[in-house]
Length: 174
Image (cartoon, rainbow, N blue to C red; front, top):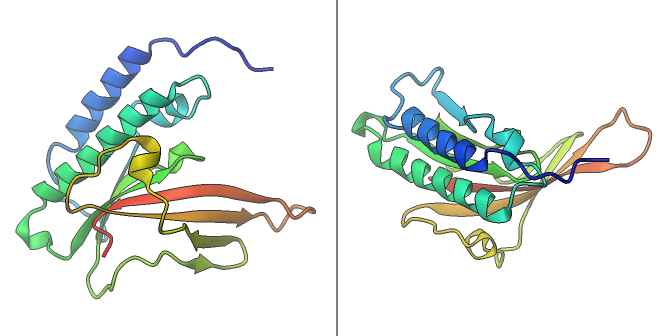
């Protein structure tokens, strides 16, 4: 049975999280290896943010900061990266997957929010869903928001269990 104790050092963790994220996103990364760059949650954020002991308002504060840093990187993008997109991917069920991504979109007509193979299926969330209202977040002008439901099936399991959850994308999506 899990401990009922609260997370210790939450103010320190939030401060370190924001300071490190500020430092890592101060400038637009010039070295896009193979047209791609990603930044996962700093300061072991995926561990303490995903804890059931972490209050909702702390998660909300961290997400808002990630959204703001995504917008900051878009504003810092040099002119010669006009075919590059900046996006935040929020996976609230698997926080270790949450990341800011920068990728080349040359000859691309936008991100595909549909995927289906033997293991994974993405289903678009209802257009009436609103992440900013549900979480009380502020989405800066110019950022698009789309959500999908991800279903993952482990074919090696005997039963028909499906894992996954919602993934939200915020940024330059089209």
